[in-house]
Image (cartoon, rainbow over all chains, first blue to last red; front, side, top):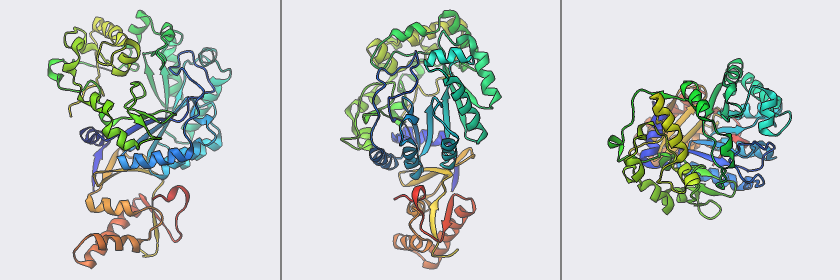
Length: 350
Length: 101
């Protein structure tokens, strides 16, 4: 019996193309209606409990370790705790993304009893009025804050998640204060993506140039390194290693390498998850691509400042192998500040 | 250790098995336990419905060698996992989230 680091398991999964960490969207329905939400459809309720039980059996067979459950708002499902229990019965590690508004003492007690790994709660501002304006649900701030407090009090690892909009970006200090008050981690993102149907109206909420600069300069918002990644040294690497060890299942049962990269590999209501992960032609094509195949990146002076997502490049710019306009925007700002991004998941050699 | 005890994986752990090797995460630990091939075989037998005796018998049917040594090795391994609370035992069959497979 040996001890190994979690990153060693992740590396092994990349080498063996094992979907070690899979995101499962159990529904698109949500009780909030956030102004920046990437979901275009909030009606779909997801597969049945029985179908999730079968899916989790397939995860076990495929070698999956981590399951992230999200929505929409997953706790809207009356059977959500049964879905969580089904995953834990198989000893899959479970992390839940939620707005926290539907959590009760009883639910939190059950999450604790099941040893759920982590719960991520979305908070958009430390000002109640601003947060509720963003969620378009009055009272949501108080409920979400209560959930963070109660989860933390019960010893459940909790994290605040905050996508920064031009409405909330001035409030970073306040958000950090909330995290500190409850002794929880906080994670910011600086990109508001288009909706998953390609609708770009939400781009009006993106940070302007000054706001982006402010966010990039804050080490608690954006991580950077002093070692630039150079194209030539990494030409044989994959543009994104989620194609090796990730995975995502939407409420319809469609399988993707990532919920941001909207190319279906198959559907679990027709084929097994493991079968799709290994044999999907679409996924094989993604795994065959290397940085040297990205013609625009090859000659781009912004390369070492860029954290390009192939999924976003496809969604917003029409080509997963082409330039991502939002990545370019941020890279330009990084170049002005001479900030090299930490490319934690982007490049990988098989 | 009584042979008629039922064994289950602790609810405080998460695990997966890749290429016949099992990896176990225990709550609040920073690292994973990586079992060897024999340990992984034993681990995969534990489902809340089998007793110590049944698991020992599975191992005897799977591996050749001195029977007494095999029994001692299996029980020693199970005992270590029980001590670390990675496994739990009961005189009754486990139910609900404690039983799988």
